[in-house]
Length: 142
Image (tube, rainbow, N blue to C red):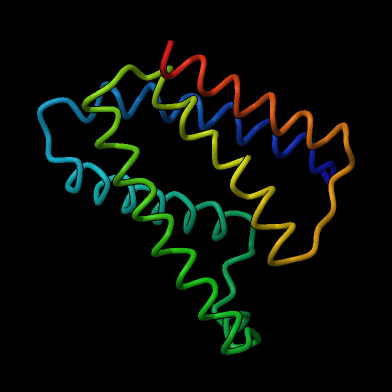
């Protein structure tokens, strides 16, 4: 399965499922503790999937460059902070509104990819980014 659109669609489905399950699970619990438990569950499940598929190879980590390891470590920090903020937002707000604002990450990444990576979007794609921003605003604040 090498189709990125299929994988991205599956990620969107599981992200939606995640939001619903966090909303249920985080009630009455500190958002940080809930995020810690989620993180441990993710690490265990991912390790089991890699082990079951024969892809758990600690030697592969040695092939990463120092900048690559640093980027992955910072990505982990960003993920942890994102998950914590998401859990706290779900404690306080409606799941549809929280998820909509979370999807503003698409707008932010389009801008950052342009500025930092030089990735170009055509006019149609920028229109889509704008519509996503407007849609998130409508769901979250109207």
